[in-house]
Image (cartoon, rainbow, N blue to C red; front, side, top):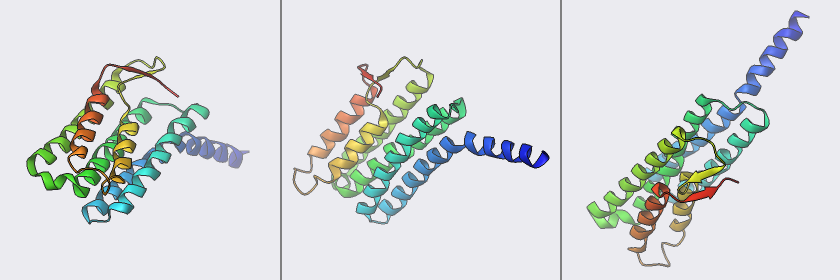
Amino acid sequence: MFLQDVLDVTVKKLKSQTANVLTLANLSLGGFAIIVGINGNLNLSLLLIFIAALADRFDGMVARKLNIESELGKQLDSMSDIISFGVAPALLIYQGILSDYGAPGSFFIVFYIGCGAFRLARFNISENNGYFTGLPITAAGVLATLSFLAIPYVPSQTFIFIMMILSFLMVSPFKLKKV
């Protein structure tokens, strides 16, 4: 009987951390995307950001399905998202094209990261009413990352506007239904 109790407690503890493990996978993938991006491997950085998006998609689903949502998980998710969908895509776009623009390129990259952090902070203190206010940082990060694929095909200054638009969309007051 004792062994069964220990096993039950262990399984319950493992189950309670499943979503957090996925969230930490998101964070780790974003961290690795930054490291490989700094080292010039931008295609691998892009791939890691997309895999981080998958982990981010599933952590919330798992938390709701297993009924293990927590305030800690919500905060950890936001911290992971600023890395994977704020800093990593910003660095990818900076390394890929906007470094050519010097200070203005740097400004719009840092502005994007700041707007993403603001968006996450606002989300964390808002009530869960079935709507997002502004573009979620995950969507903005995925769109920024996707735009990297267009670098050979569009004028380079387009990316300043892409980062500016995504920044403003994250902090805008429009409502978007959660899916």
